[in-house]
Image (cartoon, rainbow, N blue to C red; front, side, top):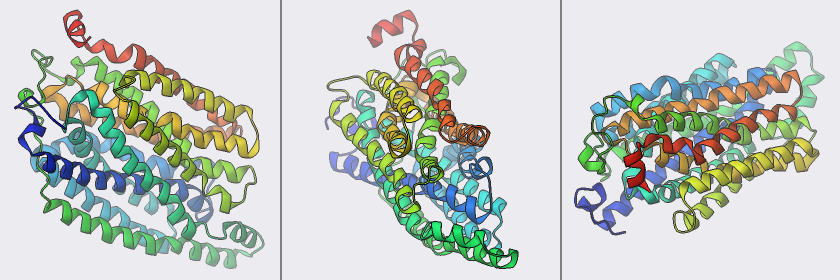
Length: 436
């Protein structure tokens, strides 16, 4: 990479230092993905272990993602005090506490305590992502930000593809047999069997806690440079002159709504697909792999993004194409049957891959000194993963698991709007001319 602006962050560091920084952030994105996509296994696992219906089981996802809404703005305040590097370390430590809470939750088989652990895990991730996403965006020219975020996305989704395989092999092992056994047990034997099932989660989350503590220490003492986004000079932006608050950037507010809807459909594609497959009678050994298929499809999408953005298509064109593909694949899932229908839900991973990398730079471009608070708004929008899947669960109980997928169609329609018109609203006529 070569950067001409002597005031930009990357120019101050040598090329080797920049590459090293990207590698370290890549490790963090791997952690994001692994822990986030464990939920796809926890939903069907806790549904059985804690005897829940569909609506109740998706509080797993809600508890995790609602933390982004609650903690994103406090995260920005924390990062002002700690700086981005120490903030990342703190986020990992908070996540370790969340993993630890799974231990008493498992031994008492108390769903509410599991949800508390998930909320704290999400809280740590909110701090971590509020720091890491703007960091990787600023670590180079804004025009290629989607490419860098796509690279981070590969780290994220490779971890996400591994997570359900690793945890699913432990938590969902012989789940069909367990379900059949407990259905024929008396109450006392059933309670004992469910207690043993609940305790399957103890060892994986103890290991996770240890890894998170280790990474927290590693990041704290790493050579990762701190990035300061509080001055307009550093981001090279003039659009913030005369702006007094974040609500004067409509492209950010619309981008936050787009992010809210996108995360909702991304989580639905990854976290409902195992339960959907099980509801169609597909055996648990096959069903547990569908989230991995979803994540592999996303990895393919990210690889495509790295090659074509911005050389062949713009970030906004990638977003509009993704919206169209999302509508087509979700419609196919609704109007086909069995394995093919489930497979189309997994293929939504391909449609979703380039949405986050495109929305983020389009939404924060031009924020200057408002970048941190703007990033917090986008992190808050990840709460779409808390609300929209819960709506899916409600519709699945009300109708059926397939019909409930209609909820994603209007989400993709709005993403299409943002890619064509919504992101442009940030510019006055003069600024718009400069942009184009």
